[in-house]
Amino acid sequence: MCGIVGYIGNQDAKEILVKGLEKLEYRGYDSSGVALLNDSGLHVYKEQGRIAALREVIDEQEQAKVGIGHTRWATHGKPSRRNAHPHLSNSGRFTIVHNGVIENYEELKARYLLDIPFASDTDTEVIVQLMDKWVESGVAVENAFRQLFLEIKGSYAVALLDNQDLETIYVGKNKSPLLIGLGQDFHVIASDALAMLQVTNQFVELMDEEIVILRQTSKRITNLSGEIVQRRPFYVKLDASDIEKGPYPHYMLKEIDEQPVVIRKVISKYQDITGDLVIDSHIRAHIQKADRIYIIACGTSYHAGLVGKQLMEKIADIPVETHIASEFLYNRPLLSVNPLFIFISQSGETADSRGVLVAMKQLGHITLTITNVPGSTLSREATYTLLTHAGPEIAVASTKAYTAQIAVLAILAFDSARAKGIKVDVNPVHELSIAANAMEIMINHKEVMEEVVWQYVNTSRNCFFIGRGVDYYACLEGALKLKEISYIQAEGFPGGELKHGTIALIEEGTPVIALVTQAHVRANIRSNVQEVKARGAHVCMISIEGIEEKEDHIILPAVHEWLTPLVSVVPLQLIAYYAALYRGCDVDKPRNLAKSVTVE
Ligand code: M6R
Image 1 (tube, rainbow, N blue to C red):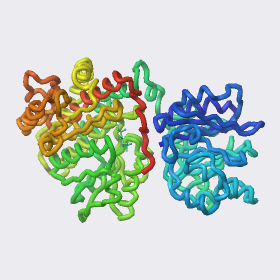
Image 2 (tube, protein in one colour):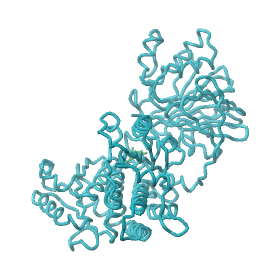
Image 3 (tube, rainbow, N blue to C red):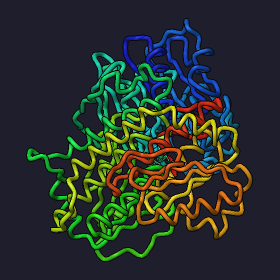
Image 4 (cartoon, rainbow, N blue to C red):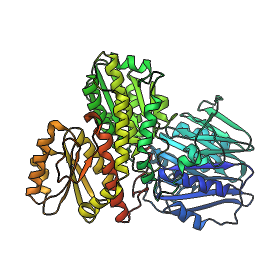
């Protein structure tokens, strides 16, 4: 949440910062701002709304070779220009951008800043006002900056400018991600490498509680005790097409379309030279030792985790519990004697999941992260990582990352079964390839889902999704997609549960999308459909070849029953997409959301 950028070098900082912010907009888009530092002082431009609004207010003539920028997802203080970063200290000497939450900001205000008028409602401003206060009382700027991080509690990635020093950006990091980008005669900072691929692909990662004194040609990284830290840079291998929309109107549509290719890529990444799907032998050994697996995740990744539970239990006979990270953190269930923890996260930065990871590591448990982002916090901090290889996912609504997570979980389940000597009567590569082909067929028939939207969803204020077993999990995901981008109130329910309460909401014309891909419950779910139809529901039936009936609206190509969630989610993603499109919503950047959720 929130994205920050910075530049110090020879070129005009303005355009580099604004372009960088455009790439970070997925992290938050409530407001944005830049601070440019030149001989005539600090120049702060900010605006509520998107980066496009910021572009309008920046003085094109303002030249500066040093600057910082921010795009915000509001936590403290509503989205407004007043609360937009950068924040200035009262004297006007310091300005700051911050990603994260200062948990003890009220305490710090009460202890040090009672006499200081604040210009915003943010937790962030306390940092810059403390700098003013301490430096005015005679503390050297660098010492005051270090002192800050001994005092503040919480998560932060910050960049600070001093209007009396055109040669330095002060940088600090704890829990929120931050990278230093290296270039010929310049340095940049960014919450995500994507922002600065425009000028460099060489980055140094900052670890928690590190401070950097960043100059045009030097960088001094120290820990809070002042010890110098040396760290090797890494190279980011991405080309522009990975992060551009190309001919697509929206990233979400591009990412939905990429799914078959992603699944094939996942297969190839986990194949050994004999063509078998294999998992790192250390991970396999820990899975064999575990008496129970705990999958921890949030949102869409949690839904993938629910499917993962079914796969591990059905294919590999290993007991699994899937938990929502934010619930697990404060309401921990009784753990088994020898648990293994799997964290699923597209971004690898989700604070709720990280909270659990840190707590489980402290208890000495083995942890595995399944993520799309190599080098992300959850990847770095877990004992092991499995990558989902989906390529950058830019749309806030997760699509290809979700199906890639399920593919990796399926491979883990097949590998675990083989390691346990369980005879699995299918060829996993073949079945996953069939699933990829089936996804492609659905993608090639988008007009069917577009029609469903016109017929069932578009003008409705609500929509229910029903299914059983893995179909219920797919329904949860379909409902999340629909609500997050079209703002239609949507819920997924197990078909059998409707009669215990939810059916009271069904009235004449209520849209219900019913999913049936599992032969053993097809009669049950079809009878649930009759129950809602009898009460006036307008039902769109999605079934699969082999158990379809002729009046079904969407029939998925046949795939192995374990792998149907890879395919059944595609029409649900497309239904959400077209619903959002026809309701005039911002498909890629839905209101109130951000792609990377780095606050608890
Ligand atoms: O990066 P993560 O997978 O950890 O993110 C978890 C959720 O915030 C995320 O899946 C969210 O629910 C999606 N944007 C929904 O489409």
